Amino acid sequence: MAFTCTYQFDTAVYKGAVTFPTQLFINGEFVDPVNKGTIDLINPATCKAIARVSVGDREDIEVAAQAARTAFKEHWGLKVSGEARSKLLHKLADLVDANTDQIAALEALNVGKTFHAAKAIDLPTIGSLLRYYAGWADKIQGKSIQTTPDKIGFTRHEPIGVVGAIVPWNFPLSTLIMKLAPALACGNTIVAKPSEFTPLSALFLCTLIREAGFPPGVVNIVPGYGDTAGQAVGESMIIDKVAFTGSTLTGRKIMEAAARSNLKKISLELGGKSPSIIFDDADVDQAVKWAINGIFMNQGEICVAGSRIYVQAGIYDDFLQKFTESAQCLSVGDPFSPDTFQGPQISERQFERVMDYIKSGQAEGATLRLGGKRFGTEGYFIQPTVFTDCTPNMKIVQEEIFGPVAAIMKFSAEEEVIEQANNSTYGLACSVYTKDIDRAMRVASNIEAGTAWVNFSNWPDLGLPFGGFKQSGIGRDLGEYALENYTNIKAVHINIGIKI
Image 1 (cartoon, rainbow, N blue to C red):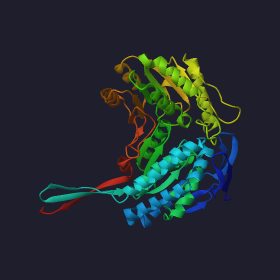
Image 2: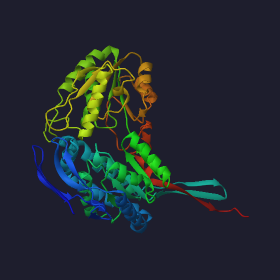
Image 3: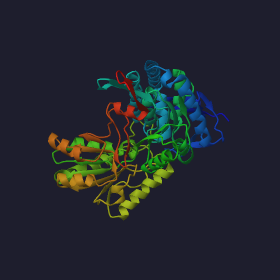
Image 4: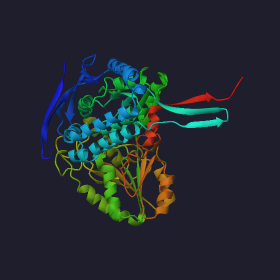
């Protein structure tokens, strides 16, 4: 039943063939799933089949988890120095760099994002993440603490064990590496479940993991459905921690599964409805460019999308005209065209979901200023869409759309816009545009969000923590803070004088 994906790319931006196995990757080998499950992947730009890949089930997750547990005990975890882990992560980063075009092409083909964006944004991020955490691997340490004259203690930051990573379809490989790199740097082993929609780049990565020389069982990749393989990750008694990026609804299910099983640790990066706040004194042209990027980047399929745009009254008309003109000029189409900015939505289901939100906006009385329709005759393309005259309780203002739909609203006073921006169950990110640094600091401090960008948007820094407030998640990815997700802290007490 062994499957191999061989795809010949003949495009304006990349020409070449990519070949790799599409079975499950468990214990260092490509293997068939227990129940022989498969799925046909669809190119979202054409609605045509790309490849057939294996999908795992509950039994496969348990096999992978056991392989990861054995690897952790026998040849990883506390058995391998931080220096050795660092060398392997550096080697994997070098291999990713050597295969940049192939991986970018797979992401464009499978996800619908543009080849240019994948190569210019996703792939450099992946290499940087691997090298950043490779640098941490031999620096994870505790503290020496003397509490009384006759007692001394110290802390150890030890790996948790087996980490289950569940990653979404919008940034398939970069979100996987966001979990995998710090987990491995800390000495954990991994069972990762990519989305059933977009497993190709993760499976290609498995060939590089083998080439880099990671011991069998340290990294296991099991593509599968959320309600079977994903649920099994949350419920497994072998897996010690789950790192998840995805919807708030699924995050709740993972919390429930973790509580019902072995009370495993969890970190959740969930949904968002990020506000962009543009004050009268902002550089309007720059604010327009960043706001365009903030909502339409990656087809709007990004958790930090700046989908709620609040513009102060003094520049509202100017901003709206320039924003609309810029959105109208965005090139929508073939992800492999050098001029394309916006590709298709990931699937028919997501396409219909976004179109339903557009219909909802119109039904609730918002003004459809631009777009709102399907683009072209094939593929899951949606025109860049702009709504005005939106009110706070509309679905398009309150709910995460995950598509190229912006809601632009006018405000007068700072206090007013802070209240509106915080009127959300989410708290992932925000952007503030102003030349007044005091105002920027004041507003950023008062917005309930885990990340605040000032005069730009959608640009996480690998050295800074990333995560959400409220229903946007628990825990942090990126930076030194991410290491807390993947270590247990042990206190060792030493008696140097106490007698009984």
